[in-house]
Image 1 (tube, rainbow, N blue to C red):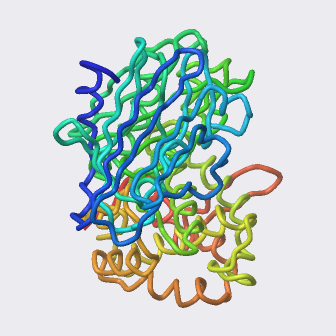
Image 2 (cartoon, rainbow, N blue to C red; image 1 turned 180 degrees about the vertical axis):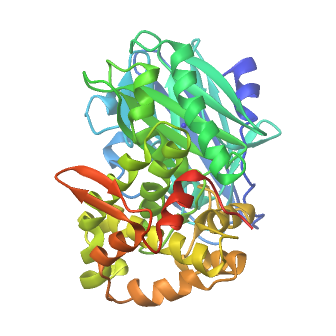
Image 3 (tube, helix red, strand yellow; image 1 turned 30 degrees about the horizontal axis):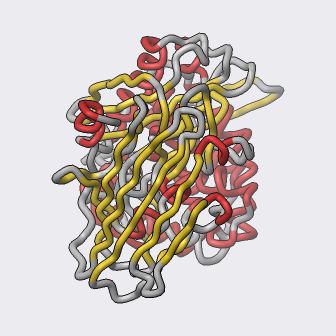
Length: 444
């Protein structure tokens, strides 16, 4: 979920909602030095906090914090973390990954968090030796404002030397950090690929989901297309994308990863046991968005759904979505979303759709920077559509498993795949709903 001098003012304008005021305050000062080591020196002090002390995020290697010093009161801490050395361990971009003179990492890797969950955190971050940094955090009076939860779930950041690009998307903006020469795609092609996906997501949601998104574009393996992507939203919306080193912008319209990750920006982080909802939404929305954009044929979409949603049937009929295994997270969740979209469209007589639901969640602040429960998502969706669909489907498939005749579903939609060939039956009872899903939104 991805500067100094003028650049600090530029990147410091990236913002999300400010954390709530708290009685206690923790102030951090962090300085980036040394182009080879990319070493961050951090000092922090807490005042008026209910719980004293600092801790590393879950899964963070404690031996990465060098020269660690704490006072006996638990109110201050200082340390150094060599990001270049951490990247050599090969533990990936969610810990640290180096590309040329840039290291990409995440907030909880380099920032110890205060034990007091209600503390107000203020971070002053600067760079020396001609180095830069890119973060997406709320800024005020020269400091970034966070909560301890923002640190725990914090987004991507880049440190070192890299180039920066900006794309305007409606009222929002996307800032891209990448290292030139690491991919055959030049800056214009990177902007084109990211910008096209963002524009289609903005059409789906009715607007681009966040005011600012930081994208860190990294090279992957020797292949064409997108290799990997991930969104992190703690403190601000960020995205890490790993492009195949043979990629060109035109290739990426045929790829699902970029649009899948962009769709995540428009929904909250759902907890507890909400991965099926988040991933199911993105898995369902992505091919629909690409089909409406003309990048994917309707026949391809329904062939994919008929083939891959079979992998999610057990999640609904044997496991329940709350107990779903990894195999069913994506396609079990996507099957739930298809059932929801069809039900909403039928009950509203075409006046609403799944988009009505997802746009309503976004309208009340449910983007990737927020943490919601499943129940809140269901309530907002059902209030927006007036159908009660989400609650009924949740009762049927989330807490417990239910019944579903998947063959009858495809038959009613007029979807027939035989020997890999896709045939539509436009006389089927729900064929009009099938066509409506790929032709455009129904939003009341």
